[in-house]
Every structure is written in structure tokens, then in C-alpha cells.
Amino acid sequence: MKSAAETFQPLEADDPRLVAGYRIAARLGAGGMGRVYLSHTGGGRPVAIKVVRPELVDSPDFRHRFRREIQAAQRVRGAYTAELIDADADGTPPWLATLYVPGPSLSEVVSRRGPLPVQAVLWLMAGVAEALEAIHGAGIVHRDLKPSNVLLAADGPRVIDFGISLASGITWHTATGAAIGTPQFMAPEQASAGEVTAATDVFALGQTAAFAALGEPLYGDGPSVGVLYRIVHSEPDLSPLPERIRPLIARCLAADPGERATPAEIVHMCRERLGRDADDGAGPAVWRDITGPPVTVPAPVPDPTPVHPMPLIVWPQAARPVRPSSPRRRAALFTAYGVAMTLLFAGLVYAIVEGGEQFRRIDALAKSTSTHGASPRTSAPAKGSGTVSGADRRTPGPSDAPATATPLAEAHPLQWLDDKHSLHIEQPVDRDDAKGDIRLDCDANSCALASDTSVIAMLYTEKPGATFDSCSLALSGATSHRLPLAAAAAGSEICVKHPSGDIALLVIQVKSTVLANKGSFLTADMTIWRAST
Image 1: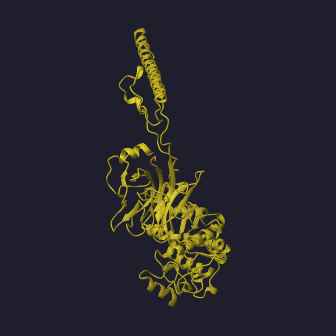
Image 2 (image 1 turned 120 degrees about the horizontal axis):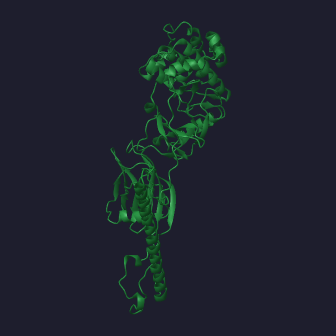
């Protein structure tokens, strides 16, 4: 089966590191709807986070479909389904979290080891049929049951992904004549855009079981049109199937939905064929033989340490104790220890004296400022004050110049940039057009931040935590109005300076520019320091 490196893929530059408070540990895979990541609950339980693809986010139809998936998953509870933990259909981007199932999909297992033994196929059908009982009991039709949506855990199969499920009380809209599902595993009524019922999932279960037993789709591969035509107009050839399961799968694949077995009947027929194994609980041993040893799940990602932690005083480490063998060696050891303590004491005294001197200078400076009527932000004497007298008659040193006060920061979290949304340094910050001060500019090959008014610079530092001062320094010699994003990733810090003197800091949260000008977007936390007026 898959190794840990294959199961848990490292994050790429455009993968998020945090999704709605869930810290991302690894990438699990990708599908038509989005990418799936490994994360953990606060208590350390692993979960799978599905994040919607950026090009689907702006589609109202998709939002409706994804919201329906969440509503459907919330209604399903069963031993052979993956429980929904958390979700947000209105998030940016939308996402959902289910319990992580530590096991490969049926499609992965078959592609690696070939057809499953009959005993395993019977356990598979019984487990998936029980999952369908829970799904149908909640008033839901899965509509996309297939090998990649069946995960093989150590204690049995799990049915996942209600992405195109149809739930009672939830409206479903499609184009006229559209067929929703995966062609190789559709029922005839589904392929011809007819009425979809619970019996439709039973047909898909029969096809999934046949795939597990044969190692290939029952109706063959090839263009979808040809596969769908065979499903609708021809009887399946069951002769290659093992004789022991042939009648059971035939009941699932009846052309008339009313003649198909129910999930409860499938469980009963599987138990009959399993015999004593069904009562002895031999299922887990079957799955262990098929899936192999479990793969160790990566540990939760720890919370980041503070950006500017308090400095630690590192005391000298005592030498490793050695028993002196003579008075001379003992005296040498005491002498070395005394020298070290003397140096440490001298350093502390110097720091205290120097700190007192700095305090006296600041105090004298404050008195001088108060006497001459200077403003709190400058040490220059007031107009007409004449000459400097007394103790102030000396050349000022660097420590005499007080620091300029840092402007107050404005926080604008989770700002969105794409081809239709830009950012404005002046209020209002977010714009529903591409005419703001900062915009995402993409062509067929790459994306960049661009501005007609402001200069842009990226910070390249070992530790995150940009400040007004670090941005000011980085922008002091900046002249570029365009910053390519090839080297940017989640956590990258970008400084922007407007002609008004306002300075902005963008900290990238999510960068999705893989498709360049097709659906690229950027989310970032923005901080603005307003220039004093």
C-alpha cells in the first residue's frame, strides 16, 4: 500500500497553512471539487479538510451545491461513513472537515494489488450496504458511489463524499438532460437523466463490487458516451465474476430499479455467504491482509511561537563534574570558576551603570525639551530661544535623538485579490473592481502584485513579524511598482508605500496562482500605518 510519503504529501507554495483555525499538516490529495488536507482537532484527532478549488468559489450554483453537501453530511451517522466535524459553505474559500479515515481507497488498493478475493468482496459489500442504510435513512441518495469514494480502514470500509447527493427537502437544479455522477458507475436511469432513487445507489454498489472482484469496470473503459450507452442499452456480462458472488451482484444490477435488492437484503445475503466468518468477526483480519500495516499519521502542527519572544539570559554552563585527583587540580578548578563568576558580575555591573547613564541622558533631554518648548516629537529648540547654555553646550550624540513615534496601525484581515477585486490604501480598503492601488495582475504564465501609484517590496527575513520600521527601511530605496509572486508563499510579507506616505503590510494567507490568469486569487492580512498629517 501507500507509504507515509505517498499518503501525506508535503505542502506546496500555494497550499494554505491554516484553514479556519485548523493547522494544515500535509496534503492528502485533490479532486474535481478541491484539495484535501490533513489537520487535527484541538484534542489531536486527525481530520480531513476539503478546500474548494478557487475557480469554483464565485459560482452561485457551486456554492449552493457545496452547501447541500454539508447539509447532507450533517444528517448521516453510521459505522461505515466518515463523520462531518465542521464546515463553512460561505468561507473564503469554502471548506469542510470530516474525520480522517486512515486507509487507502478501494481504487488505490485494486490498482496496486489487483482483484480482491471473494471473502473481501463480501465484507466490502456488507459494509457499504450498511453505510447506504444510514445514508438512505437520512433521506439522502449518494448519487456518486464509486471505488474512489470507498476508503478501506482497518475495521472495514467507509463511504465518503456526498458532493452531488440528493437529500429530501433540499432542492437540486441541473440543466435539462444532464447526467450527474461518474459514467462507469452510473445506473441506467441516472445515465439517461431519469428519476434517481435509493435503488440507484444499489446499482452503483453492484458495479463497485464487480470492480473489486475483476480489477476493472464492469462496463469497460473508453469515452463516456460509449460507456453510458452500454449501461442503458445492454445487459452486463457477469461470466468473468466468481460464481459465489455472481447472483448477489446480479440482484444489484437489475435494469428495473424495483427488482434490485435493498441494502438490508444485501447485508443478509453477504452474511449467508460468509458463514461462520460473519459471526466470528473475521472482517478486520481480511482488511489488514489487504491494506497492509497502518501508516503513521503525522503529528499535529504546533502553534507558532511568538514573533518577538523575550530574550533569555543564558547563564554559563558549569563544566562536567570531575573528581579532582590532587589538591593542585582542585585549586585550578576553583580558580577557573572564580574567574567566570567575576566576569559575569562585572558584566552585570556594567549593564546597570550603562543603563543608569542612558536614563540620566533621557531625563536631561526631557527637561531640556520642556524648558525650550520643543514638541514631543523633536529635540530642536523653539524659535527665538537663542543660544544653548550651561550643561547643554556640547555636541549631541546618537542617543540624544528621540525616536519618531510609530503611527497607529489599522488592521484589515483576510483581504481578497483576484482579477475582479483590488485593494485601496485609502478608505474604503476593498474594491469590487481592478482599479485600486494594489491589484493581482496575471497573464498566461505568471502572476504579480501591481500598482500604478505605490512602490512594492518583499521582505526576506529569517523570522516573520514585519513592523512599521522594517517596512520603512525596505521601502526607502524601492522604485518598483510590480512584484512577481513566483517566490511568494503563505506567510510572505510584502510592504507597500503610497505617495501619501501611508505604508501597508500584506501577509499572504493563501496564494493560488497555479492556473495563472484562470481563477487565480490571493488572500492576505493587511495592516496600514497612516502617515501623520
